[in-house]
Image 1: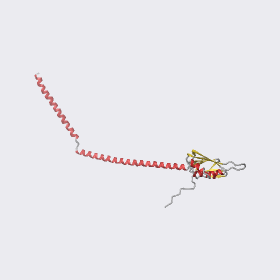
Image 2: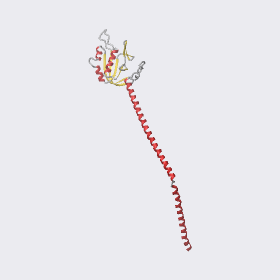
Image 3: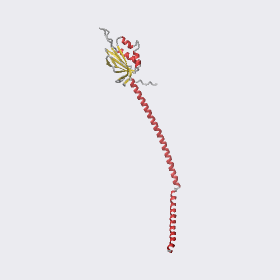
Image 4: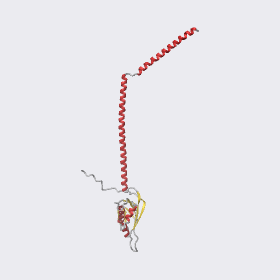
Length: 242
């Protein structure tokens, strides 16, 4: 019993000695690791150079990105301007096509029926509509503000040719027969007033025996012209030299 008690302090001392040795070894083993983390001076300088190079590259990329953004905005503005120009040209072309009668149109206006009169008695010939009557009546409507017109379904313009060929009237080369129906789009009240003037042209036609009927309509639809004849001799004039 006494010998076992004397060995117990010795064993404890040995155990503590071993633990002290292990702790000391562990502390020493950590010291070299700390020394390895510390970079040498030349390595720090090299890393600083790399950082400056990266910063310069980033600055150049940002400048290039700003330039690309400005160019993209310029392209977008040019594209929008091109679209606006194209739209303006399309609207202008549509306007000219409307003026030239190349598209169907509809709107309020009046319908005028011009026909030969009935004979006043046996052996008396009825008054017959002539080309000049039809042409003058159309001019009265143009002067009263008509914007579009058709005669017997043929779209006419202010310069359309209404001619007399024997007993036949042609409108822009197309033969027409009585009764002659003139459809004019415009202010119905103004057009009717122009033909209702006392002593005016419509009254003169009635005075020679022709029948003139006028009726207002809230919606008339006129066809388009088949197309314009190409010029064979006329050409755009060249710009005079300075």
